[in-house]
Image (cartoon, rainbow, N blue to C red; front, side):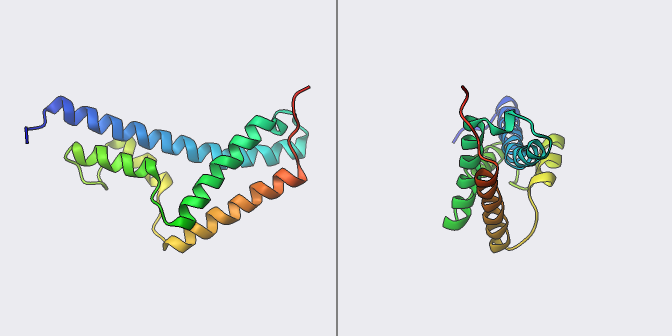
Length: 138
C-alpha cells in the first residue's frame, strides 16, 4: 500500500468536515423546520404550508426514525468516519470546525433513547401535518 500524502490527508480531513457540516444542516432542517412550521401556524405564515416543503420535511424525519428502528448507523456518520480514518485520524478526532459541529450533534445515551426521541419527533411532525395541513399552490 502506498504512503498517503499531506495533500490527501488534508483532502480527506476537509471532506470529513464537509460531511459533518452537511449532517448538521440536515439536523437543522429537520428540527428548525418543525420549529418554523409551528411558528408559522401561530402567526399564520403561508410558506410553512407549502406541500413540497412539508413532504420533504416529513420524509427527512421518517428516514431518521426508520434508521433508528432498524438499527442502522447514519450514512453521513459512516462516510465521515471513513474520511477521518483515511486522513489518519481517529473517528473521534476532528478539526476545529468538525469538533464543534460534532458537539452539537452527538450526545452520550443508550440507542433506545435516540430511537424514542426520533419516534416522538416524527409523531409531532405527523400530528402537525394533520392539524396544520399543507396546501398546494394555486
